Image (cartoon, rainbow, N blue to C red; front, side, top):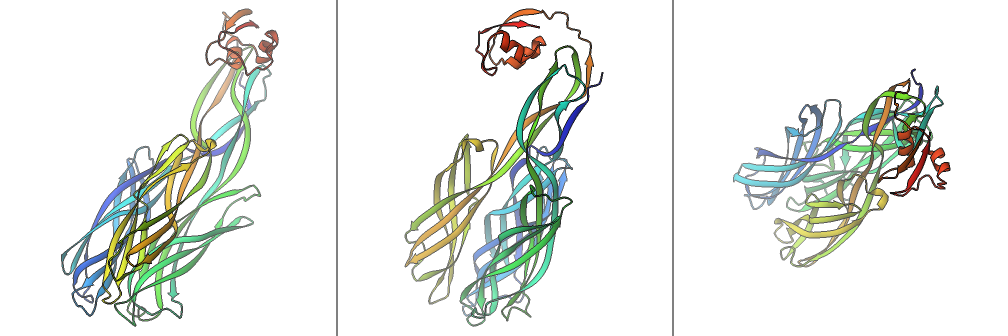
Length: 511
């Protein structure tokens, strides 16, 4: 006889793949005819973007572009330093195991190392080490059996768990071009030296079956002004963005995991705008939204029949039942003596966290490595510019709660609220390091299909037995073995707590 059951279908992630893959990308950059010859490369900043991801049988193909911002010393003393902006496409194959063409994949690039050389006065060779952070997962539907509807002889072991039931996922691309103006008090753009981008002020608002997501792109710009072609200026500008993401059925209990990724960004430094206070930017932002509901679900973890044999097919799934993101804040303070040359003043700095790693051991996590700060300084009298990397050694413990130890992954180490104060040649540095940790609670779920109730074929079941408890035994496993039930064994043997039995204990079993 076929056994019918009531299932609750939930959608979960299978165990995800989170790996970092490193690639070196080389590029020769030829100075435009409008630029003077170079005698020294001062600094090279590379901004990486991934515009497309294609899953392959043996990995992932990523395509995108690298934006190069080069500061160099010109061979003309009156011109001082100059900047070059250029962009180059790339295509890389990232070799990864357990990736398939149905995987949901995101790839975020980050530059770890830049090596540059000046083979001649018109060519700059750049070699860039890019770390691609790959996150791949698959959605799977799991039927959690809640009860059997046409058999009273089946004993069930019920388990209760909290699940993040995934309802829907949506990704939207925001593509825009904006003209950005400097504040009135700022000097006009003469020549752009460097631009860095960061998404800040992220928020969302729910409206019926739509989600309004918005934020700002923070632009940090280093440039030469038209008033003094050898004086380095700084500016911070905000580019606001919004997008509307539609869903089929948003509820009051719906929760959202929203991820933003700048897929492409380009500064238009054309001659018709660089003499004013305006620059044009083209950008593309991917906004991916996961809508889920947190549910506590009771389901059948194991079952058997006292009066019959059962035959069925067993399916196994390794899934992420719940997930959360936490951030740990570590404040770093450091004083560096003789950090910069005499008569130089700090004009810009950039923090690199890619040389920091987190070592994991149960509830202990240790942040170790070197925090690298690239300091750009300018001579007050000659307007000469120098670049220097300062290393700050980090060894800090990160406290994790006991409940947060299941499959934790550090997804990002960010530097926020960076400040540098200068006293002659000495620097005082303050940085807040934000360690972003994703914690997946992973379980193995087994569920039965095609259950048949058949005549009992076991002839060797005694009506009465003495059983001696072995390690890892439970009353449930003993009752299942002898086709009786937990309550009967507990009553006969005067066991007050069915969850507590001892190894070597003798139990009277009566069917």
